[in-house]
Amino acid sequence: MTRSAALEPLSHDHHEGLAFAARLRRARRDGDDPVPLVAEVAAFWRDHLVPHFADEEAFVLPVLEDGAAPLAAQMVEEHRQIRALVERVAAEAPTWGGPLGEVADALAAHIRFEEREAFPAAERLADADALARIGHQIHDTHSHR
Image (cartoon, rainbow, N blue to C red):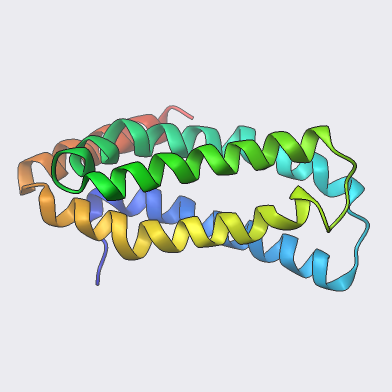
């Protein structure tokens, strides 16, 4: 399914998230030193995920809450779980067996859920005018970053 223009910026963010998850997975597979990746996870959280989650919760979540409440609840819960993992990465000793090793898998699974279920549902539920408004709002927030 082709993504609506309104949600394309969020899908682009997802592409960046998948690239970051792949980088973490390669580092884990190759046995790279996990210590430097703690700062990378924190930076990716701060610079990419915090604003991305805020956009989703401000613009996509209301549409899902009105017509697909279980998907809305899953989106918010997965955002919470990823935030908790990132907080654990910062607080615990950096090892691949801990939360650092879980971040990539949680992020990739969350992105798949949104691209395959949540976003298509939002596109079905919102009429053309609502999608256009959402698109303008997302574009405005992205252009101010």
